[in-house]
Image (cartoon, rainbow, N blue to C red; front, side):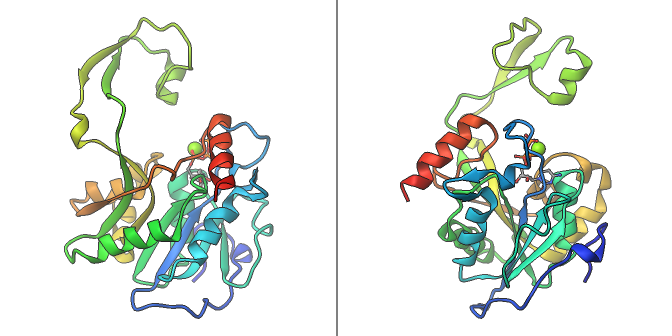
Length: 262
Ligand code: CTP
Ligand code: MG
C-alpha cells in the first residue's frame, strides 16, 4: 500500500527478514523531525552519533528484535534515499510527528506495530520485546508503552500573562527571570510516569484512533494519548534509565557516552 499523503516514489522496501515470529510486528521509526533544539544544522536523525547517523542505532536494535518482521522509517523530505538496506521501508515524513507516523502506518501490514523515535538511539531489542510482551500479556489492552517513573518533584504551574510566543513554546527559555510563572500544585509523583518510545499497538485500533480525532492528531503528542482519549487500555512497561531522548546538545553528549560503554 502506498504511504498516505506522500508520493509512492519515496516508498522503498524489500522482503521481510526471515525471523518472523508468531506475533510479527512492524516497527515504525519517526525520524522526520528537523532537530531545532539540537541545532546541529541538519535533521536530528542523521546527526553523527558514536560513528553512525543517529537513526541507525534504532534500526540496529530493531533488527536484533525477534518479533520485528519489517521496519518502516519516516524520513525528512530529501533524506529518503540516504537509508538503504534490503529490509527497510522508507517513507517521507509529515509536518508533525503524528503526520510522519501516519504516513508510515499506511505501509504497515502486520496486526501489531511498534512506534519508536529516532531521537531515542539507546533502544535495545530487549526493551522492544518487553513492551510487546506486556501488550500481549493482556488481551484487553490495545497498547503498551515504555515509560520511566518520574524522579523529580513535579509542579503544575500557571502563567498569569504569558507572551503569545511563549504560549506556543510551552515553557520559558532556560535562565530567564519570569515572575509570571507560579506553582499551582505539586502532583503525586508516585503515580507519574514519563512516556517514552517504543510504544506498541494493535494496528487497527491505532488507525481508528488516528482517524477519529484529526485535531488531536495535529498536536505534538504520542500515539498512546490517542488511544487513551478513545477510552482504550494502554499498559506501562518500565524502561531502563539509559533509554534517553536526544533533544539538546547535552543529551547528545550523554548518548555518546552511553553508546561508548556498549
Ligand atoms: N519527528 C518526525 N516528524 C516530524 C517531527 C518529529 O518524525 N515532523 C520525529 C523526530 O525525528 C524524533 C521524534 O519525532 O525522532 C521526536 O521528536 P523531537 O524530539 O521533537 O524531534 P525534532 O522534532 O526533530 O526536534 P525539535 O522539536 O527540537 O525540532
Ligand atoms: Mg519536535
